[in-house]
Length: 351
Image (tube, rainbow, N blue to C red):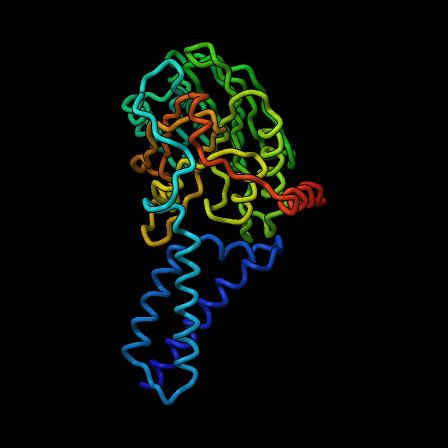
């Protein structure tokens, strides 16, 4: 019994520390990684509270203190993820039209470079028929396999790389853009105009920055900088804007929230669900890493997480409709002066 108490208390203290650590606004990976598993921490927190109640020894002050701290922690974690539940407020209103000439059907897929199930992706594309397809972690092998799409998707921007940061963009709609290297010379992004069937032009940004993990990059500096540079570009753009890609950041992180405030772009996940896109192989370690954001002049026809195609990421599908009237109904995030100063600080941080 004594050992059980000790284990529960130590786990509780560790869990509370894992919630406190992200308050330290440092770019080193250990301070950022604990932002990811907030759903998992909430579930573990609830299990620990129930266990401590069952094994509670009221004569031990440590039991009471840990139980009280875990209760506060549970409320805080729920507060953080609540906006992404079906009970949260939607940032972007729904549209009943799925095939209007102002609709833009988007598919983002991190294929996992070593994955060889290209035929599965092709079958998925044939089934859901997106207007624009972004595939990341694509090298020359993937380009060769997916170029079968060229007949149906005559507009392409391709930057295949062997470093797991290659990108392939296929479109049925006319593109006019280029590859950019915003922060690192071997990490590309794509910036392009997309001409909808109605004739309306939309600005599209495609991203896949490095994650802050020891085996990739021990700091989030470069990732945050690229994300926020695009946020500033989006804010200054006179066209409707869409940003899509594997941002290697969760929907509820302070960097992603800062991105939303600086850019003024909307997250279709809010008020609709988590749509955890990574890790496809482990159901208990899933986070929303693959994103599609849009400007307030869009409404949402649908958002889906599609079936796994052999990658460690699920593909994500979003059907947007350009609709200027929606701007009056959408909930647009706003940046404070403090937010703007923080964004500038991150953008100007040396890399």
